[in-house]
Figure 1 (cartoon, one colour):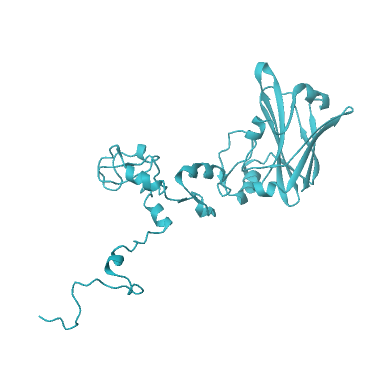
Figure 2 (cartoon, rainbow, N blue to C red):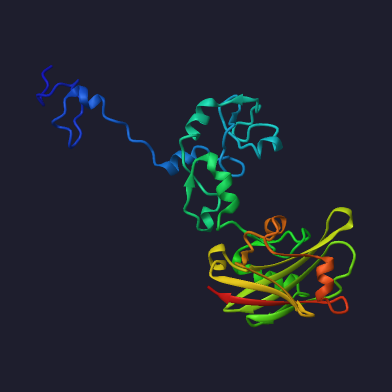
Length: 286
């Protein structure tokens, strides 16, 4: 039968904008790749919805589950088949080329990175939750920056707050045995600062004091301030000046590296009055 259209039934379909290209050229046109976000979604764990990252294991049917959820499961959450210990090397190779969004994307982080850089970024991401800034490990609270002060006012009511950029932080009974923390809040320049004095037991019963100031705010906000701690009395003076740390950073690293005002019990006794130690604290803007 004649073709009434006059066209070859087997001719290739011509797409708009490709009329000048030959048949062989059309066959070699690149196949559009899905957006990066779509590629990352292929690695979504069906249980916790976090990403399945290398090393990647699959069930016998090829379904994936993340390394955190896998030990808690007895069967594949997708097909209910046995989990097995089959390594999916192909998906691992693909994962090494995909840029994954930060786990705190819903909190405002716009960063995307290779899976090898993901953990390191998220440990310091400015959008990660804030922990309770009180020293010690007894309070496990976490929340947004806006909720830190309400948490402190409701759950740590014993902490005193003083107003002004120049105050005296009075630590009482510094001769108490063992490790002891003293905490006070200072409010000035529209911000809240936490003053921390820690006494730690060192080798052979040797004790050291560590004093530091941290801002209830971000690291960038903290860089706009400076603080000065001063012990004075009996014609002696000991001073430390630095930038306050953000509560996101915490004080543990600074204390470990002695990046704060450090003195031992013999120095403390030079400035103490009846077992009480007054530290002059001055906050200034940069």
